[in-house]
Amino acid sequence: MSKICEICGKKPMFGNNVSHAHNITKRRFVPNLQKVRAIVDGTPKRVTVCTSCLRAGKVTKNVQKRKPANPPA
Image 1: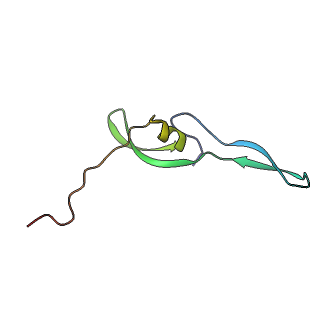
Image 2: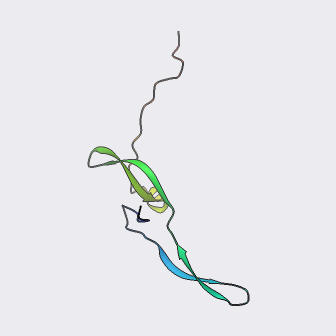
Image 3: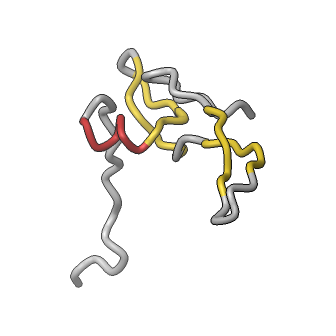
């Protein structure tokens, strides 16, 4: 599975870890991706979306209506 947001295309970036002694090692910044059931072209579909797109409202989540656990008698 690739670490790419299906809405904005955000993907991993590369940089350096820098210690207090200024030792430098390579590191990878990965986006915070979530699997969400969203409505795409009018049908519910599971998409991988970054949290910044979820908070910005770029995704319409699929809300499922559930039956009550114990219906009143």
